[in-house]
Length: 128
Image (cartoon, rainbow, N blue to C red; front, side, top):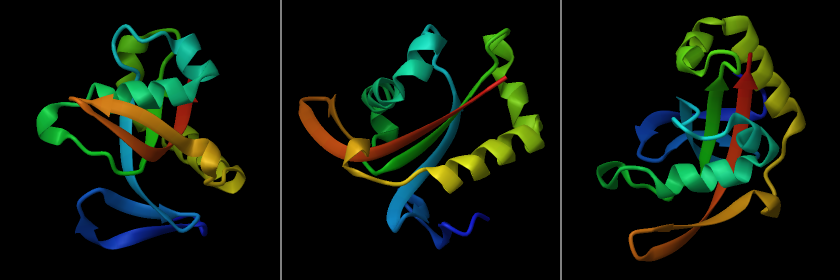
């Protein structure tokens, strides 16, 4: 575990870790089908908004989230295989935590149903 990250001791809904003193729900996933990888890399906050707005109603949450998005740029349908590349993934995660901070710039506003929410979202995109 990274020294700037504190894992939660008990599973608490919506909180997996604390980073910079802020609670985050950790989501490791892939680029949504049809989402432009270049757009995701150049504007990750738009991707975060998309992820919140397109979550299923049964799994809805407006908690702070850290999205770790795995993308195989040459073969997107094989992005799931990046989970096996532990060296790549953990090196990128360590570098992310070494260099990132939580700030007002991480606030996003999204709409779900008929409600508008404000939350904090960080996005780490790991590409191969």
